[in-house]
Image (cartoon, rainbow over all chains, first blue to last red; front, side, top):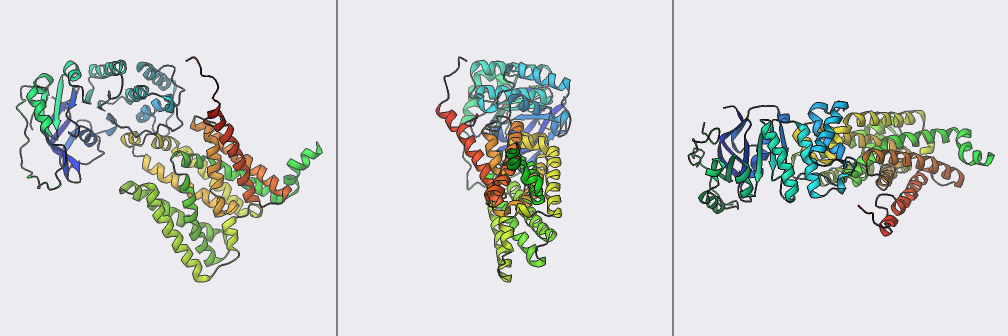
Length: 263
Length: 291
């Protein structure tokens, strides 16, 4: 199996308190993985760790492809200044950064690809609209168009369907399916358990510690979900030092191809 | 026809100092107005003001060491400004202090150091020149420096334009795709200082920021797109320079304040009647559309 990402005893956190604790395993290239867990489970932290916004407290992350340009990341709360005077077209065009960079021209082929991306998310006719005038759902569509152009092999979406209606999430999930079909690796943090059951082949259930990881049906069992819910959210200010040799508490998942296998 | 000529053209065709002043004011608008637009969009409108204070002590030190010497004062101002700009950028990027707090600490320190040095030597009337500038007394050197700064500004801005815009709209995305955001931001802060030094000779440290921020605010009321906003800002900056000089010539008021006052009138007009969010437009939006 070629791994797009491999976690080795990975601990991520803030101020030495772990938010993701002792995560081990690999994500196969081309996998479509849902990352599920209660609020504060470390889903966003894991994504930030993978893109390198925060550094591991312990352990490490190995990328199959070391080029950071090959990971595209849609954060949960994008730091977009929505009052900035820029239109949808220019915003989507940012997705071409890898090809165009600071100085590269946007030629006819590139312009066509921008228009295709805008069309693919159903925003045709919105090209000249200022981003300040977009609704939440339209904003999310625009950001997906930009992801399309980024053309990355690994795509990470942090709760991309929060606060968008059913039509929009269905349209956008079609794009996720398309990426999966193109053998891209897609990690998606999700809250909607039923949606995950219906649409994601593989799931990582996280509650600071990895609770279960593998085939979605075997991960999203009532027992596992209950266990995840019980894990406390608050950092313990008096927490003891974590003994590093502690073994991660993953349930057996060796029956699942390309998931959660220990090094 | 001859009255029109008398009012609008003759002051410049007849007097060399007016031609120099006009050249200086136009060059200033070309460089400072685009910078002002970015300052405004980055919510750093008051940063220019703070930076103007940060420059003053450096220039004063240069002045005290070598008198009214262009190079000494410019070097002093640039050094003080750059040091404050770089330290601010570094602290804001590496610690929990936000840009505004980081800048406030450093410019106040810089100001205190400058005032201390001035108090050692006692005050001087020539320092008034530093405070209020004099666009009507630009010599060759100064004029070349202002034009040079404007040229450098436009070239550097063209080089860092794309990362700078992305860094403003979506800093998270910029960080994810490239490391150009940080250097672009630092280069931008350096441009701010360069243009303040220019403004400092023409308008004085107190009003230098005016030719940056007022045109930028004018642009905000007429454009929804940053490109058009920059064009409008620069045009209104240039118009303010020209009209301000004319008014100052005919009425006999100080030229620096006249330039800023014209910009102020344009600004108030835009505030009232601007196409994008002007007050009258807000009060009487017209009937709503069908879709």
